[in-house]
Amino acid sequence: MMNEPIIELENVSFSYNHESAIRDISLKFEKGSYDGIVGPNGGGKTTLLKIILGLLKPTAGRVRLFGQNIERFRDWSRIGYLPQKVMQTDVRFPVTVREVVSQGRFARAGLFRRLSASDMEAVDRSLEISGASHLKNRLISELSGGERQRVFIARALASEPEVLVLDEPATGIDVASQDKFYRFLKRLNQEFGITIIFVSHDIDILMHEASRLICINHRLVCAGSASLIFKENQNLLESLYGEHAKHIAAEHAGG
Ligand SMILES: Nc1ncnc2c1ncn2[C@@H]1O[C@H](COP(=O)(O)OP(=O)(O)O)[C@@H](O)[C@H]1O
Ligand SMILES: [Mg+2]
Image (cartoon, rainbow, N blue to C red; front, side, top):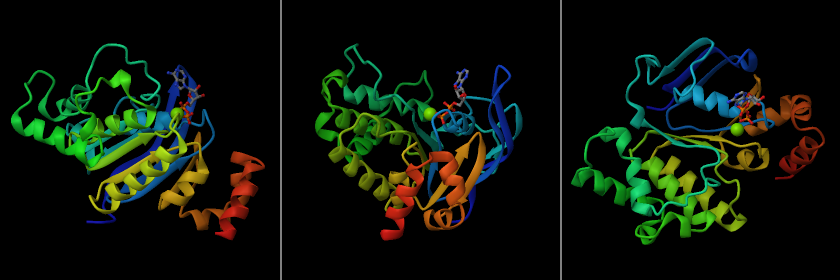
């Protein structure tokens, strides 16, 4: 069902050692949506994702996942996560693509269970969806940025999640691979019905790809369709992005 909130934040705040990172954010994410979270570096985007993923506990406010209080939520395989900087991580130990993608299965199988034949089928399936089947016996250290990205996406998909959370996934990837990647995400969303939550500081990209933009600068600055935001929040965008906002708005009005 569309319009069903699968992630709900209510007055959520978080501080790192008394340093406030996000303040009083209330926000809902609906099943099947493609939401882009934008905002300046240091604005709290990654912090917000980590709260949704249960990696950080809010200092105030409530979080519900799939209708359940996050404290009680256990179905973590329903949420796939592509962390920031996973691409830049130096992978020196000799681990194969197949092994990396199999890690994504443990969210479902449990860390100490052996993977079954059906787990391995899911691994193969997610490699195939991600266009990385031909890489499966290669060492992760030998791959290009774009190839590695597909492998980490395959790992996030291996648990067959309903939501895919991506934190600046295109950083360090060449432009041609990026284009392919955005088409791929759109397909995951439209064909497979996977809810996408995509964080980037690059508003140009998300404006074209996401159906809703959420602007975060410690607080929730604005949320809505790109055209609505450009109509109503020109000043806010300028305060977030300075002169760059004018250039984007002009381009947006033209297209
Ligand atoms: N582990 C941490 N310890 C202390 N401060 C942090 C930590 N992670 C992030 N911060 C601070 O919290 C704020 C928000 O950071 P972050 O959520 O990473 O923003 P963004 O992802 O939008 O760049 C920044 O001021 C950052 O320096
Ligand atoms: Mg970040």
